[in-house]
Image 1: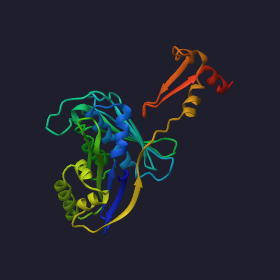
Image 2: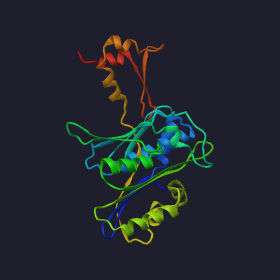
Image 3: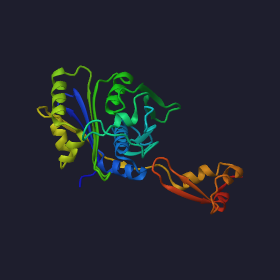
Image 4: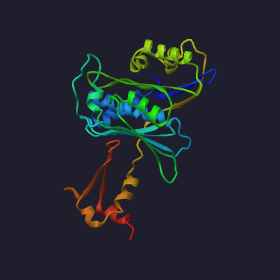
Length: 292
């Protein structure tokens, strides 16, 4: 089985950059951890894939990129964060909400997400203030919205495709994404050729499912164009939470605040929003680590 990863490529004349990502396994992990409906899994998978593709531009190991999508639909806000090392985590506010499909074989992601809202990108590059870009949603389908973000916030014309294929038993069959960006002065002919190739290729999730290797999908995208692969990186679902990290946060709270959080076993239960990992802490444990 091939591992989740992305490939970055450019044509021989450096006119077009292409990023192609396979995210099947990590989207599967995210959907299981959040116990998502079929359409919620597709929405969550598209956002986390988008975050990983955008984060490929991060330069330093501690840099972090976060995408927040809120279309005031049944899904509620969806947030995904990714770092420069190819790790990502995500959550969807209402993971079990679903809406019926309008077209056979196509999950109604736009209806679940809604389009009365915004897509926001936050880049934490270790400076005093993070960069924040925000655009109104176009459709709630995520790919169109991301292309609109690139055009309006970064003035970069982009072709974006994102897809998640979900089986009737809610297993993730395939997931991935494609970003094609024109460099300044790019020849219209090469852009038209790539657009034609992508149209003929069909759904990105289907292409990834049918290919035994991701570079085979890249070959379909770049058919008739000479290109070089300039980078590859493995991708993982990985949360930044930990027992110690959350304990340090609890230790900053007052005894009165902590007492309100105790359950019947005199323990505090903390659940991470991003990965649904559950942590338990006792009063004795927290008092030992509490700063005077």
